[in-house]
Image 1 (tube, rainbow, N blue to C red):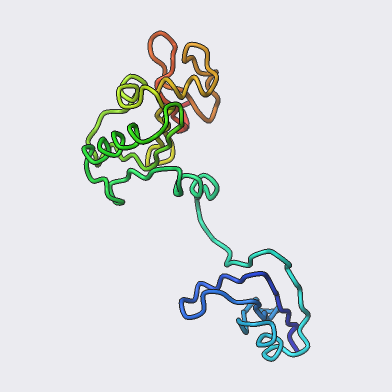
Image 2 (tube, rainbow, N blue to C red):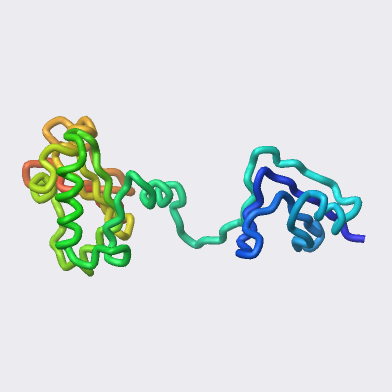
Length: 197
């Protein structure tokens, strides 16, 4: 006879549109197969005698198998106060991005940082932003713009002040990341792509 267990949680995310949330799941421990989903009573009826593990206030969700992902940065960058500027979310041209910049510059108190994500230079056909170009858009706000690849970060002069960099001079490069520098040694933007050896 196979061993069975029931997991109870404050919420079970089922990924089933007909029942998106549940209280418990019954599992055949030998095969890892979920045998019932629903209330604790329903799962006990479907798996009599199964041991019950109460996960308390935790949420139970499916495991994610992903070859490469950055879940915490992705969560931060995909929600307010970050602003998506990718072509596929309503910014198909640089003109639309500039219009958003203009609205936010006018409607955001001076000194309040602004964060953007999803800059696709290839599809927008724009040159690489640097401190000077971003200073023209945002002279009074620290601004960070993440490239759509997640491997480059563009920022303005106010951001370097927020970083605490003296004279906009970045710290030393690391094996994993480098700063694009102007001839005078001050920062252009961050690039976290591996360097060629």
